[in-house]
Length: 123
Length: 111
Image 1 (cartoon, helix red, strand yellow):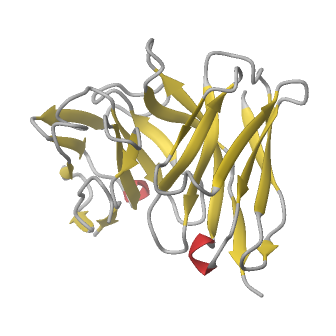
Image 2 (cartoon, each protein chain N blue to C red):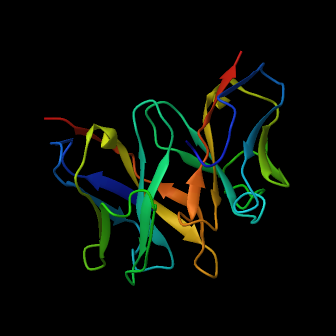
Image 3 (cartoon, each protein chain N blue to C red):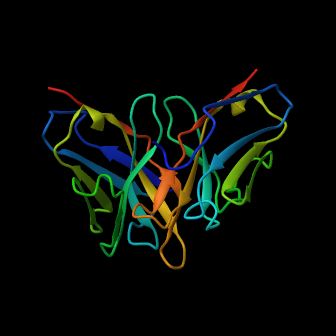
């Protein structure tokens, strides 16, 4: 069974860069899926951040694109998120996910999720 | 402001049916059959329960069903059970510059 696990600091200072890694087990990251990140501020709804294919092709949320970088390491079966210049508004539970796409690589739905990791932005 | 509009809350009694709506535009819900629904319990990761408007992943009870009319998608839960009490989110592909959007979520209370 495919499993995704987020790792990274739980506390980040304002203006610094948030960095998270997702390790995929039980399947290859070099398969026909996109891999990415969704976040959920405390008590609020879901926000898609972006997703990456093993080839390096990416989709990003336009509202975050200037601060986001998602990368993939097929040798480690991992992918990573970097979010720069963070503020308190970036405090959220961050989920790593597998994204299913259409034959034309249009995003469809998220079928596997990590358990989520809370990242707090505070000095 | 979420791109897709959902009611903040719905409620129903055990055994009843409830429907949660998800309203978008012709650029997302109305234009593509790429609507999905997720169930989330407090403190847990969301779980996919409907994809491509009407399809259920393996293991999801057939009490859960999805449909779409024009720019509004709907999730119906029939034979409501106490364990259905959770938050529900819709999502859709969109032809805008952010290709995937979520609704604001609906809290389902089983009375």
